[in-house]
Image 1: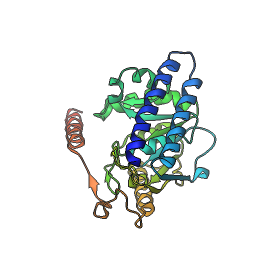
Image 2 (image 1 turned 60 degrees about the horizontal axis):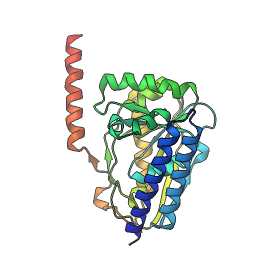
Image 3 (image 1 turned 30 degrees about the vertical axis):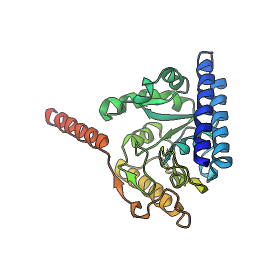
Length: 272
């Protein structure tokens, strides 16, 4: 029953605030729309606690630099973790796939938010578009959120980490703050059923500029995945299947895109 009530609350609240954001996206400036988005996410976090019984705690704020551009690289287990993340900051940009631009009015809202919208297929074109769009965010010294797996991960599992986060790190020349979570135990991916209990989202020690690609990717993945597994609540499993812990996933769409990208990169190397 709690899941049903929360899901109705989620749909109705999202619809109302979506209309508000569409209106504010037509007005000059960004402050009204960004304030509405923050209010929306805080209302949703309230609903997670009071209606669904998900007691979310956010820790590690001291690890997020207060000045200058910062990249936040987070574990993505749930629709809810994005809501929690945005509730923590007034003005947060983020990296997203171009599939969101297909929804009515959402393309305008994303542009107003200075979202970094990239081609879901990845590759050189996505890399160039990310660099161009993120220039605005970097110049403004703002925070930018990226989910380095590029997918929602079933709680306990992980996807292959994509290199786009490294390119942002190299372009920005700023710290990357990894984020671990176990929220998927309470709200797994986009599941209808919610599981009452505690959940955590934790900002970890930042990775400072200067690492080479392979070292950076290894450090980032290790910090996020290790701490996310440590946060798992084995006394209240919720949506977690213990057999899934540490399993690496790759869905069919991701596999096809990876193989196509690798084939294109191989062909490009042969012609140079």
